[in-house]
Length: 394
Image (cartoon, rainbow, N blue to C red; front, side, top):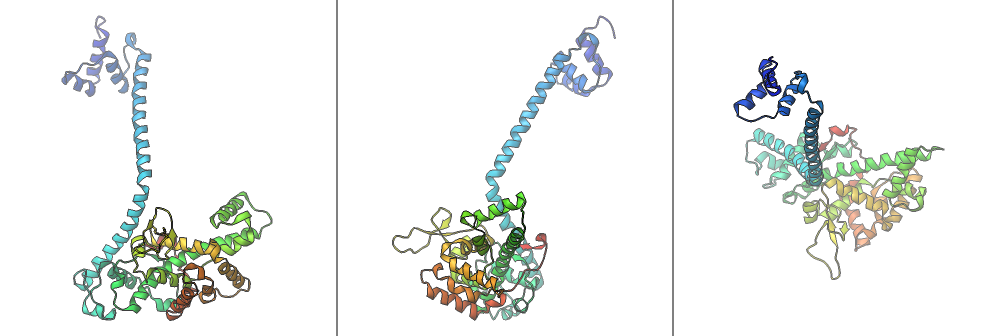
């Protein structure tokens, strides 16, 4: 390079020599680059600058400002993303549950239509005969029936000792009441509720087994002590009373749970069950509830609603295991445990008078539901030992 060439010209000559396209583009666009900007572009391309004008501090300052600005933009974008994710999480959860059901339902709808060649909302003659000559059954119920058929979900086999497949519906079919056959409607309802009850009972039994393992040790780890504190709080046990905790962490007889779900939801057809997944008619005085159409004077309660059916079952079981009204239920369940006797719904249903205002009449109704529908056949039922990922969450 010529000695009398200015430092700025030297920079541009270097860019030409090394064919720096970025600087060429700037020149073509007739944009004026400062000397510092040209230096920075050359440095980015790993080109050594002429010694006389190499201002390290200046270049470093420019690079630092650019990096700070980039980091600031990235941080703002990340914070915005996290806040938006937190705010929409409840909505995403509800939508996901619906998508799970809708995706599988649509799949079964397509298969069903392809195999049988009839419109979505009607049933061919052969299928009607199988359903005790039912008339038109709309989409949701038909998809559920077809799903159970495809998965070979058979109550007769379960009554004889077969394990129950973990099929968890997130909501009840809205048109369940349109099934003309009472027997058919009841069977569909039992098939929906049975796996949900068994799933929650399984979780309770796992806690119960862990509890007794911890109590059998002379010294407990910090993790075990924390687990115990968590369960005292979860089951509303005062003064860390171990005896009381043992009475509360226990399963609810399947026959009782199904009978109460049937009674409180009208076998899955009540407004509360369909609109709020409220199968057990639990009351609330908070905002998250469904307003009853009819109330007696002075009543201000609502019926507690849930995002999915499984949540309703969990809340119901916690209610029986913690509320003071069901103390005798828990005590007598514990006596059956101590005597190593089978936990039967008919043995314990008599202690549920407080569940409804009708008291003894309510208990008699539950007994009839259990006996007429042979629900005690399910008291010893268990879920197939599938991995969690193998369950059908619909």
